[in-house]
Length: 293
Image 1 (cartoon, rainbow, N blue to C red):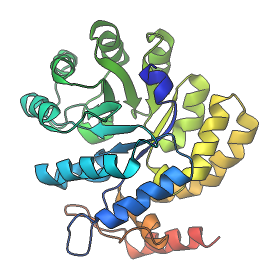
Image 2: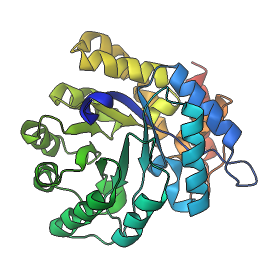
Image 3: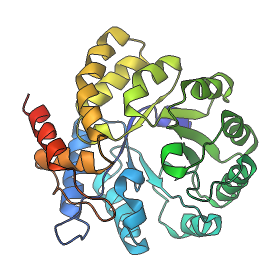
Image 4: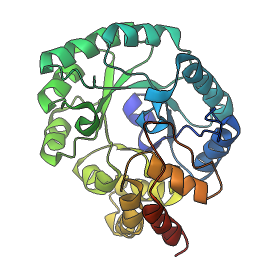
């Protein structure tokens, strides 16, 4: 089965729950995994940006990967985030992490360094050579400071065997359409922007790796499945039902927004690690009001 077939639908970039002591809360992580699988999502992405990976040490990352595989127990595919702005270190992590049970690796474009397009190409080419699993590119210019152009994405898709897809979160619909028009048939393209998922699937995307599906897994994954069937009259009401919630999720920062929702739902504690801080009281009150409507 191709990765494009295996990962069609809704993937969830799951948060990393913390206790008040700032330790990883594995009980809450298990509760969250059960919740989103029970509500019908197609797969899980662990150690993405939403998982606050810049604040996790190597041992915590390894423990989270192993716990996630154990808890999911083959019910859905698991994608593991392995990225960074030091190519050599990322290559070493690809060899040291337990990735045997992973469907793929999601790897964000190098942040802060602001490499040229050739630098981005060579970074991913080197990762692909070391990775035991197919690599999904992650283009999120708002966080990394640089964009993976459509030309570079397509070059990687066509020239590097182990590059299997992209999570596109540029917000640039025209760029996305160029990728979708010219991609190889087996190249996975998913939305990285919850707000734009419906129109992007209408353009031809295969689904989404979502933040919102942590807390709205049923509505969001139902919406995506309707879109993939071409049933936009059924998808549209769910899209607009989630719109205000999506606005609140990203009102200040991610994952402070989604953690506030999940805390109000009784799934995790409302704890983030510095430099992030919890939602301001004003926005948190809007979250509570939204959930009570």
